[in-house]
Amino acid sequence: MDAVILAALAGALFGALAVAIRWGLGRVRDPEGGAFVTAALGFLVAAAIAVPVALVDGATFGGLWAFALVGAFVPGLSQIVFVRAVRDAGASRTAVVLGTAPLLSASLALVFLDEPLRPALVAATIAIVLGGALLVWERSRPPGFRAMGIVLALVAASLFAARDNLVRRASLDTGADPVLAAAVSLGAAALALLVYLTASRRVGSVGSRVRAALPGFAPAALCLGLAYVALLLALSRGDVTVVAPLNATQSLWAVLLAAALLGRAEAVGPRLVLAAALVVAGGVLVGATR
Image (cartoon, one colour):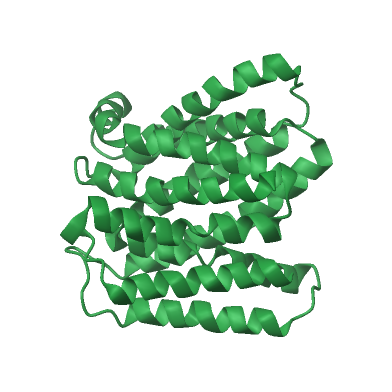
């Protein structure tokens, strides 16, 4: 039951994260700088939770290297892909595409783990494809919408699906404290993004870009820090097939929050809400039958 509650909480927080990133991009059009600020401040949020918990529980630091390695890529460099997807396609549409992660995770299991193809997986695939088709055939889209944002969101969903499986395996193999693992993952993500910012040739120093992005992306950082702690706690206590579909409810949360907080900027209509519902239903079906 703990895994279910934590996974549902992570889904709500990740849905809020997409909306917060969209809000930040409305103030600072710097996806890379925003990605770094989100990860760096998210690390501080997670560390503020992890340190006292570790002291009380007497947790050790063994096995955390695996989470650092995964974190450098997801949510590290993948955060750039995610933020750019939100910039190009909007928060709600990006979150709907991210809801396909459970299906992608199951597909990876079919290919690499020789899991059987069950009828429920076919039905889930149909539901998610229909949801995606509704996105493609939308008549109303937010200002500045670019189809490349949907492509980037698919890339991010694939990376998140791989992340869920790798983190679950690392949790089982190492027995590392999940709250410490969340902080280490975000710390590695921030370090990888700092290296990227330093190596990139974009005009403007790293310091100036961070200072500019800080006010706009602070809410997103809070969401990311809390969401990652909840997600890794859930993955340490429950199977990916349970956690991933509940985490995928971020699609509906993002659509509802975007409609309430961003209004016309997201152009949320009945077709988008139906697309989110179909994608979430498909994800839940994947988890319920594996």
